[in-house]
Length: 312
Ligand code: APR
View 1 (cartoon, rainbow, N blue to C red):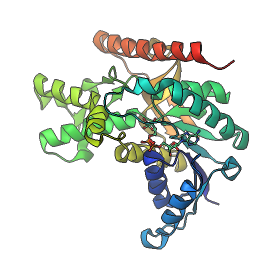
View 2 (spheres, helix red, strand yellow):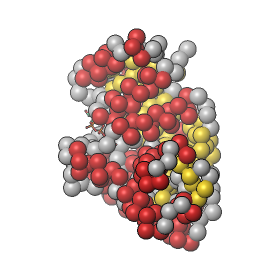
View 3 (cartoon, rainbow, N blue to C red):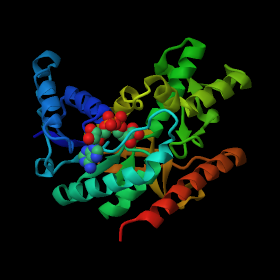
View 4 (cartoon, helix red, strand yellow):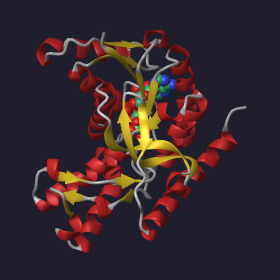
């Protein structure tokens, strides 16, 4: 029997991710949204592409969580997206309410699932879903580092005119302007980029990766990025469905690792069928640790705003 993956939110990110996951063929996909009939229409359209893409997986769209029953993995992309001039943090309270209600429905129908949070501001939404779900921490995590890293890798490969496949990079911390690209662990064909690029070029690429989401928002004008986010969701989904135990930067609840307590943040993890199977702790320089602490402080500020605004 194929695994069952639910994608909540059939907008740009959710529908694109559902299409990519359906195409893999490993899992049946349920696409859920509050807009009447829209997820059913999108899913039917995708199902009718099955003979062309050679996928025997099923995809259906629904307005009811009953159809999501016993999902193995639930991906939450519901919420509002950024418009020009907005930061991810401007979405906080609206998306907090959406994530809270979605998580309660998800847990009711799939008490054993893994939850991948995608809605922004990512780290705060991941923490909210983790707390509302009552699930153990390895079963609730967020997608951000894979995307931030993909952006950084893209810019490095363009700068050096080399294959994206040979560029390995790490971006840690929160999914915001304080994200922490780890230049020391960024390599091209195993060679540290510090051997291949001067400091000016590295700083420029780091800055572009930090602003990667905003760059897309300013070009799209009516919403935020979705092709690279959907591809990032798919990479994580594949690691889970095939129990690949990939080492990927993911948002997870930290209890002392990297000196951070009771906060969801991006760190390298082992991702497999059980979700976050372990957190990989690497030694940071004083400067990197200070950047990680700044990023944690920004996430903590959002958590405090959420705590003040939680419905009783
Ligand atoms: N339950 C289910 N779906 C919902 C709910 C809800 N309570 N509230 C909103 N939605 C749906 C909307 O109807 C819409 O179809 O979420 C979808 C969001 O889609 P888009 O507006 O296209 O936004 P998208 O670009 O997909 O981004 C979604 O992911 O990357 C993040 O920052 C982004 O938080 C945003 C989220």
